[in-house]
Amino acid sequence: MLGPLAFFAFSPLLVATQRKANDADLVALGQELDELMARIGAFDGNLNSGGDHFEILEVLFEKLEILEREIINTPAVTLAGYLVQAGVALKRFMMWP
Image 1 (tube, rainbow, N blue to C red):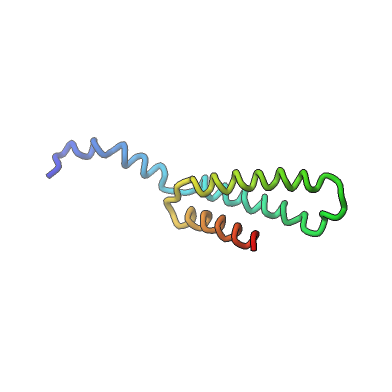
Image 2 (cartoon, rainbow, N blue to C red):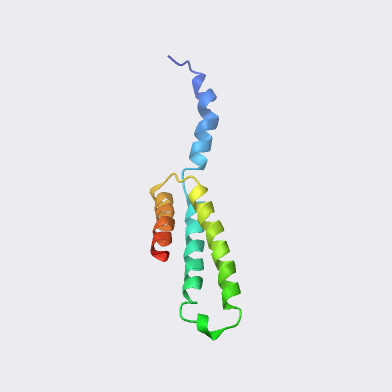
């Protein structure tokens, strides 16, 4: 049986858990991912016009890879966070047939 001081032994863990009780950062990363995907989608059909389109797409895909990795490596603690992570997997699947 734990004594009355046991609460203090576990309080740092409780504070850390309460601090991470939402996935606001993960949801924000998901919104950033959606914006980036929209920018990449805007290039669909415009690649034949020449110019710096390939260089721009290369930079956007590099950002996409970094953002996806950050989302997947960020621990989710709520359903919203898990949905953002599932969205990364789905977008990756839909993008590469």
